[in-house]
Length: 427
Ligand SMILES: [Zn+2]
Image (cartoon, rainbow, N blue to C red):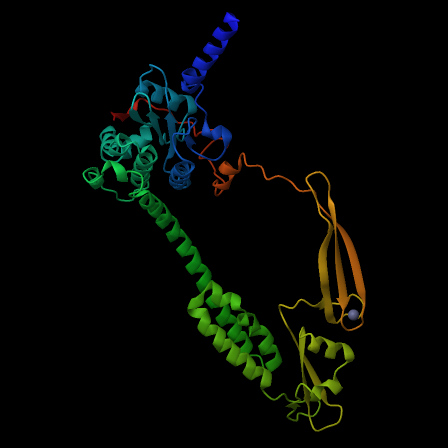
């Protein structure tokens, strides 16, 4: 009995103290578990902080200017954080082997210490004194207030900007003076998000503008092709793609104008009197009721369900008839497998027996043609329900693009080494 109690006690003690005490070999390597750069095994940082830090680092990683690792540990025992940082840096080989552009940022919570460990290449941009300034001006004040995530985001952001050569003056933090204890958590974590978003937005804006200009270019090309076409029906068909709402939803400026212009042009072309191919005489268009006698039963059925619209042009001559077909783009009617007219639609789609986690269900769809009456009933199986796994979705959802490493596979750092460059600060 006593022996057992002792055993439990040891286990508990090990759980409390030993569990979060890391050695260089036992620090979880983010490269081993996904695309991220942050080792946060004690969950000292929130998911949101990790997300922002990863995004910032990804930017510098993509530029191939540096590789950054962030490690936040509750305890490393009595080991000196600087020694630990150097050893971990060299154990993981942070940074590219050739340019030695690695940077490792280590936080040791119980020793209240932050360390920057730099590769030889990184030291050119981030000499020790600069590392120290970043820590003192951006990180330590936040750490003192208990805002570890915020302090790290700020420190990483300044470092990334310097490494990316975005001019960033290291200025004393204004908020140190005006930070009362009770507003620590709500003052400007949104500020971090803002900076992160703004840099992403500019990339998006470039993409958006390029797409918009391409679309405008396409419009003018098609406009030219259509106005040089003598056939008004062909003109209509060429330019009708710009009658879709899609364009002005996507690019309100200038496509709202283009939309109305195209609408005006295509309507004009649709109603421009046709010239008979046989006689060369001008034809005139029949009204929707007049044209029925020239259309087949299936075509009239299509007009009724509005899947297709027919224009019937006649000249004075007998049997000189021109029928032009305008298909509606978004119609629930499809071509009937039997009569081929666009009058075939889905009457219903219902579940007959629902699927469960243990068994699949069945459903039924009914299709019917309003023209020939042809119908088809389809029974289908509804796949078994699956539980969406919550584990792992956290890390995969923010992984963003695929990360490519400057050298080596995705499961390793670049191969850099450190001679002990960098600086540390206590808080
Ligand atoms: Zn049919």
